[in-house]
Image (cartoon, rainbow, N blue to C red; front, side, top):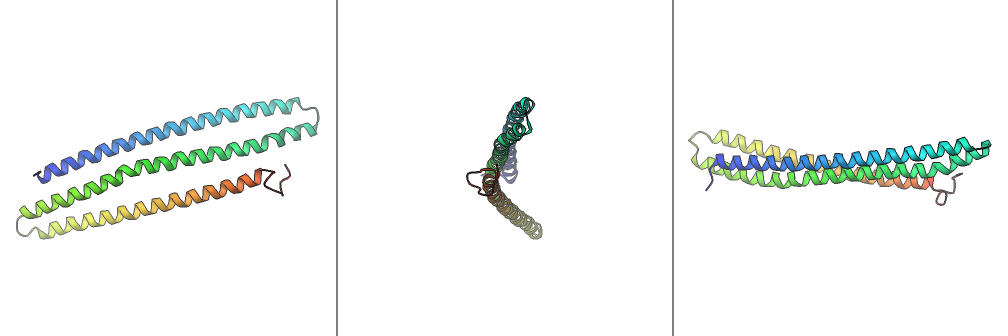
Length: 184
């Protein structure tokens, strides 16, 4: 049977490995976000250059207005696409980064409870107050973790709803076929 020190050491090693995995997930997310930003910037630059060339080639104000009108909707759709993609990267990263910690937290709780139980069996008389303090601290940490986890999930759900609503409203506003008030 492992000693309390061995249990804590194993738990510490496991937490370190989980943190390392989460760091890899975060770096992958940064890579994905950087690629999205670079591709979006390149696309906007190319589209802007083409639109500017078309404006320069315009022979009258009506042609300039036609160029502006023709680029407005695709630009808005690309902006919406960018925000959708960026949100998906962030949401996936959050989910992937949190999952191992949830598992780790559960395993750590079991390990700490077992170690605390073993320590209580071999503790000298009079150490009940110290053990109760440790148990209370673990219970408080568990409660705080549960509350933070619940709050993060609520924020993610609200953000998903807001992004979906904003995307639907913006798509309706920029798409002449679905927006009878549009003058584009």
